[in-house]
Image (cartoon, rainbow, N blue to C red; front, side):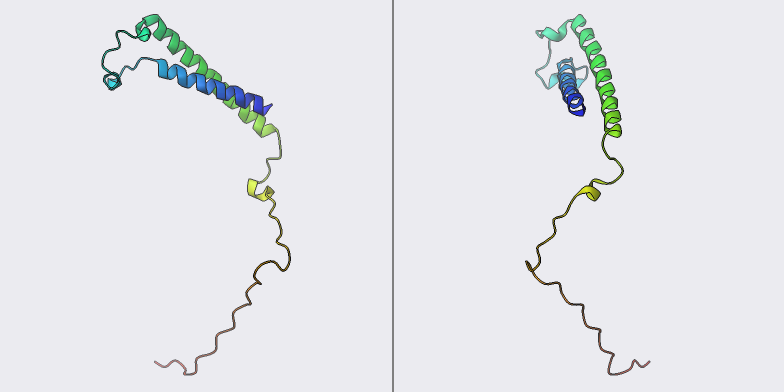
Length: 116
């Protein structure tokens, strides 16, 4: 079930990005794209309202799907430990590799006592 919701979430996210990029810029970025956009098909006011409404709807659906995915993730599976606790480390076969180093020897006492 999580995979289906995740795929739908990805599709909604891509649609949201596309709708946002289609909107007309209201800032100074219009000069970077070649100046005026009078010949553009996006200059109609009705299209702007449609894109704004579509952005709001897609954003709402995106947030809803994120909440559904969070609930599904919290319900399913064993969420009691860390991912690292669940990882299994393979044991090294005996005799393969260097031997463990021996414990270091205790340092000898100084031959001359410390004098002040």
